[in-house]
Image (cartoon, rainbow, N blue to C red):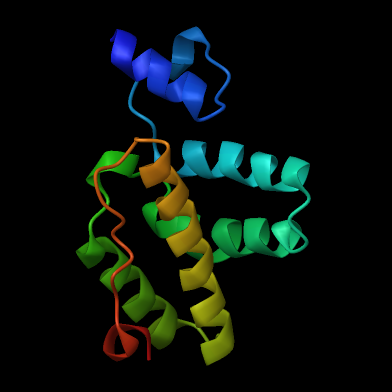
Length: 123
């Protein structure tokens, strides 16, 4: 439990009684987006919208540690086949997820970044 709390503190999360459970993608994304805003990342608003509109509806409820490449493969197959998103938008959503999971790995919240999809999966 101590390790979990220390990891959350390192990742910049504010702890409350409700935060003692596993970190979901949606919960991590919220803090991640806020940290990007504070850091002055120019495109943080668009990145936050990409997550909110296209990624979180499908993978937001998953525990961060449990997300695998197959979940992302399903997400992007769905975006390609059930929406009219431009290919550049799909690549931008993937780029945001890759950055989010890369930082989660740096924060020691996940063991590996699941963003290993190729052009075949992204279209």
